[in-house]
Image 1 (cartoon, rainbow, N blue to C red):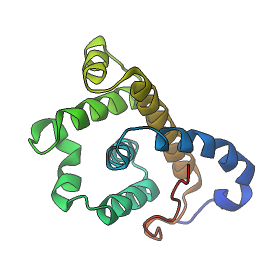
Image 2 (image 1 turned 30 degrees about the horizontal axis):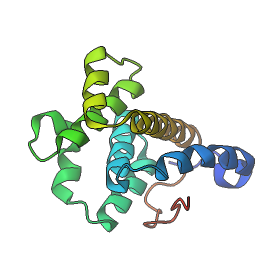
Image 3 (image 1 turned 30 degrees about the vertical axis):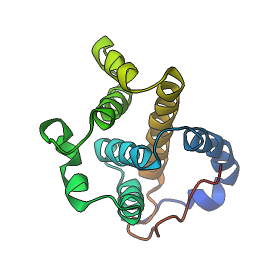
Length: 153
């Protein structure tokens, strides 16, 4: 696929505004590995090749196993994810699909503080926004280098 336009170049002021949303969850007590797992899962749902490339490489560079990446699409049927990860993944999926049930909310509240639920919500919404921008403008997938866009809070 050919890129439609270079949003990194032409959309610098828009990226600057979005960067604040990216920084917010990175300052939280939520594990970086869990945030990246959430970003990867949401990108799977949305079908964003660029973000899948990015987050899979960042996850692997930070020690995530291939097995957990391969099984993430079926996390509900896999025993290798913690209760905390399951709650975060269910919450992110519900936000992505705009279908948040009381049951999913109660589970995320059992695993996370109120501040962390807010941080997870911002993280899920932010990756959804990045997915949509990348799907619209088609940056070249496969070129990302681990840590290339590391957030420095």
